Length: 460
Image (cartoon, rainbow, N blue to C red; front, side):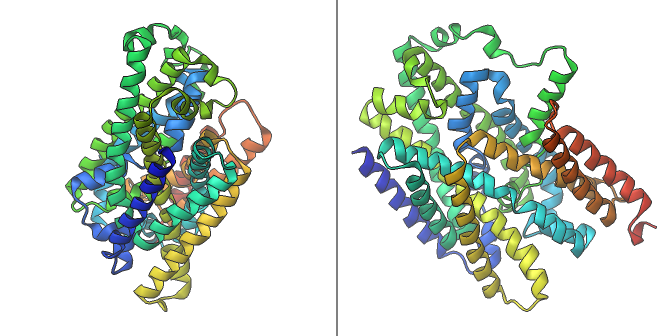
């Protein structure tokens, strides 16, 4: 029954993708849904941006080991990203009528900066896509019993197919349906487990005080690590194509801004459910958290809940992960086709040909991510690494480019390169300090110094 329900759900998703594909006439329809999404669709799409494997599997696993202090990065940092994007970035970027985030660097700094920025924008998504595929492989392993790598490959084929045919329209419509399933499934599971465990307060009363610690101790190094955890997604995902394309798909600038705040509130609220469910699991079935804690929730649900709860839980899991994966696959493909291939072809591609290139790029990135997913299996690490790369290279040029008139192309290029090099150096040295902090500082300073020393011609 459970297997048939999952197969039915996957087939329904593919069918929705097919229906959405009929709306795709141009590359703008494919990448940004024609900038016509109503508030409820754009909000649900933004909510689904990160609500995937790292929230349900990764964050709950880290929470069991480290408590609240271990999940600052996600969900708290992720919610911060949406709030900051709505406050400082959505309105300005929306009014520029851009197709990709790479277009911002072209308009603001020129084609050379666009090229370098696009090189930094696209590759980080490979690890992010891989994390989602690992999660779906784990689900297939638990439910069906197939090898994880086989589940990864099967999941990649399904998600890639409906993204390939429907683009942002398919993503947005499926995100709305999947968001409803996510919330309903997790709420019912949390309620059922809470009742079995004796109530919410009974479960929380057994949690050690240190597990609920939210602020760092009065130690400089710990404070730096704490700030770094907030920055990984809080700032690192601001210069990301998937957040950009979901916000820019809104039907109006007011919807774009409001959807950020609605999604942030919804994300932070719903993301608490997997954490609470993990506590219930530890309380009721402590043997389930032995070994790989990423598998604690699905194993517990499969062994200790009724069939309706199993169907809702695994349906919500697949919904969360598929919605995240689809946009993560589209994002680098959009950057690659619009900001790398298109400029190199010097206007020789028609819109139909560009759309074809984008679809081929979807296949390429999906294959690369699938291979990575078969090699690496730590979901939380894969997600964190992908956001760090954007933070140390692109955040400073984007923020200064929007708010500082004297920001120059040379400053942006130096900022990107030196920020990334600094991060690589600190990673190789393996210091006890978070590598992203010195890398971000260097990137910010390089942006300022480079712009002052080599100003743009219009600023001279």
